[in-house]
Image (cartoon, rainbow, N blue to C red; front, side, top):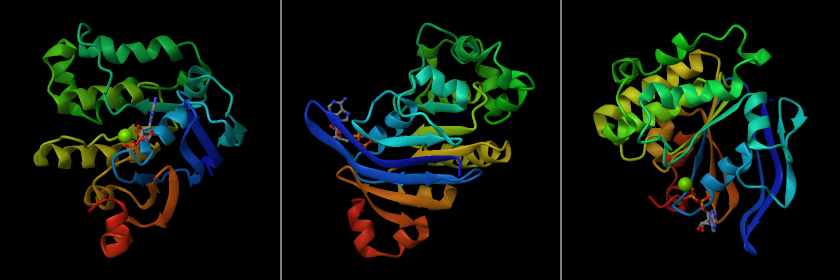
Length: 235
Ligand SMILES: Nc1ncnc2c1ncn2[C@@H]1O[C@H](COP(=O)(O)OP(=O)(O)O)[C@@H](O)[C@H]1O
Ligand SMILES: [Mg+2]
């Protein structure tokens, strides 16, 4: 097993956001977190990367307990994150945005045999945008930059928060192909996604999150065929 959450409880300002969340991600899988808006998907992802710290429970990654590590240390161990709002810097070029990653990881052992070229092949269209500043990118292009920047960290587990959100249908299929290419690079993916049809096209396994709790685990296709489960995710 590559990553595991064990009974994670998260409170923010005395409101309970996550309730005993347990889940597992195996090496090579694409796993999806499904659930309505406000269910807790992003909070789970932020807890894994270390932006939120859970009050109880444990987070394991590569057989290490990372519960109390800083986000930076988690990245050095092989985690990377593309946030829902992309965080692409407007004043920096695409190339500079992506190169930010190398500030963190250069000199580390993990980067020794890493070729950034493979990263650029996930979204080949990025190569034509390298000199463009963030402010002149479309939403879809920003998503590509954000994911490419995360890949430039040479991650083992890539955390994607709503990477398909707001994409035009034709771009959705490009992202689906990109996810397959990421998987072919040997990278495991945990994706927060609100659209179960997209989830069923990219993920082998999924969890439904509802009011901060995991209420279902199984194939996305099972959800598509089950009215009660569809209702849970607001479809
Ligand atoms: N930093 C925060 N401060 C206050 N409330 C938060 C914060 N982050 C998340 N929440 C609350 O936690 C719940 C789950 O949010 P979130 O994890 O973003 O859900 P999802 O990603 O499934 O839409 C929501 O009610 C949200 O308002
Ligand atoms: Mg979210």
